[in-house]
Amino acid sequence: MRLIIGIAGASGVIYGIRLLEYLRAMKGVETHLVLSRTARMNIGVETDWRVRDVEALADQVHANSDLGAAIASGSFRTDGMIVAACAMKTLSAIANSYASDLIARAADVTLKERRKLVLMPRETPLHAGHCDLMAKASALGAIIAPPMPAMYIRPQSVDDLVDHAAGRILDLFGIDTPDMQRWPGLAEARRRD
Image 1 (tube, rainbow, N blue to C red):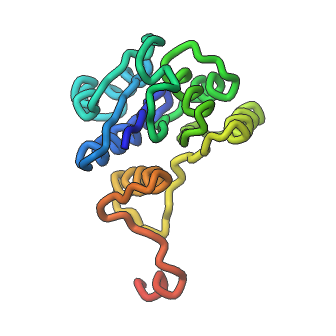
Image 2: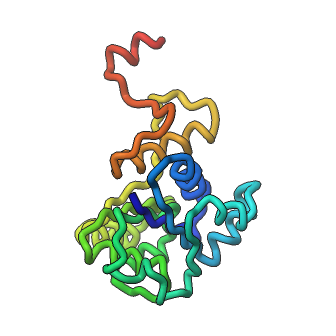
Image 3: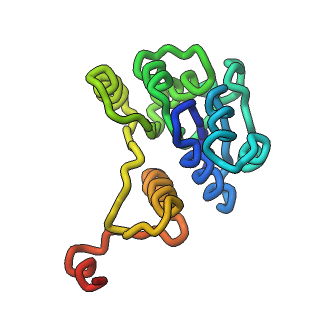
């Protein structure tokens, strides 16, 4: 399996990092990473990670300015792409086919080749323009998957919430993550009390 991970400038870079951590531990998964300029900034602001350590989690790293990268072409076969977190600017570029950087171009290629594109927009509150962009991207074939917390897992930490969101995203690609907590049904959930 070959996946592209784009990390754009929205708050929530930890989602992309956690996806890379999970995928790094799996055999037979090749990852291609693209970081926006503001994602690089947010890594230092929001986490204890260094950019070079995040890049080391990927099999290949591409500069966001490199529109000649292999992932910019439909002839380079992938199983899909995840943008986590997805800034509204990036969502706008994808929804409007404005491929001025590699994240937007790789996403556009993913859509045109009818491959799975998962976008994790991380903005709140949303105005009508944001909602329109999400609807437009969805109409093009993207899966819009904001990292909404699942309280039925009874999270004890932010890591629990991040792990669950990352696990749900990887579910979309048929990839199981360790210790993924799933909804057991109401009867079983009540027995936990």
